[in-house]
Length: 361
Image (cartoon, rainbow, N blue to C red; front, side, top):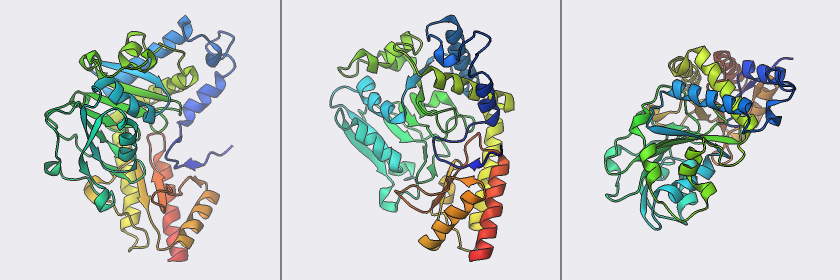
C-alpha cells in the first residue's frame, strides 16, 4: 500500500509509525487479550497509558509543575465556552484579539456569559495581518485576554508571545501546539484540539496555571469544571480512551524524533519551500498574508481564477497530494504542514506546483 501525502487541515495526517503500532496492537494490546479501547479507563493498564501520555507531553512541551494538564473530550470549540464559565464572573469583561475565523468563533462561545471586549480586530484588513500590539485596547479589569495563536483558515500566526499586563493570557493553540519550543509560563491557559499536531480528533488538551483553577467562575455543572477534572486526573467521566492512547503514541514518537526543537526545524523548512514556490511564481500563485505573520502550519494560496483552482485540486489528488482545497470561508487552496507531514511531502507539493504552472501559466 502506498500512502498519499495528506495536507488536510484537520483531522490531519498522523505518523505512519503510530498508525502501524496501533494497527499491530488493535486486537491485543500489550498481551492482555483485548484492545486498549475495550479496557476500563479505571483499570491499571489504561491508567498507566494515561500517566505515560501526560508525562511525555509535559516533557515534550516543558510544562511547569505549577500547571495542570487536562485531557478533555471533544474539540477546542467546547473549551472556548468553558473558559468563560470557569474563569469569569457572570457579565465580567473579557478581552479578545481577533485575527481570523477561529477568533470570531471563540467569541461566539462566550457571548452568552460575559461582556466581550474586542481589544483588536484584523477583519477590516481581511485578516491578512495581526494588529500591532500598541494598537490593542486592553481592559484594566478583564478576566483574561484571549488570542488564537495560529489561524488555521486565514494562515496568520503569532510569531512571538504578546505582552499583556492586566490579565492572564489565554490562547488557542489547536493548529500550532508542539510545533516549536514555547514558554508555557507566559500563558495562563493554553488549549488545543489534538487532531492537527498531537493525535486524533475527539480529544483536547488544556494546560492551565493551577492558581487559576481557584477562581469561582459561573454557576455550572461539575462536568464543566476544570478544577474537578484536574482533581480526578481527567477521569471525572469516561474519557475517549482510544484517542488518548493514540495521542500518547504520537507524543512518544515526537520525543523519539528529537522533540519540538527538531519539529521547529522541519516545519520552518517545509514552510520555506512552499512559500518560496508561491513567491517565486511571478504572481501565478499568491499568498496574501503579511510575511512577518505567515503561518508555518497552514498556507492558504490562490490561483488567477476558479477554473485553474478546480483543476489544481483534481490533478493534485490524482498525483497523491490530498486535501489541498481551501476552506469555504476564503476559497482558493491551502496546504497544512503539521508535525507528522514529512518534509518529502512539501517537496512533492512544490514539484507539482511548478509543473502545474508550467502547463497552465
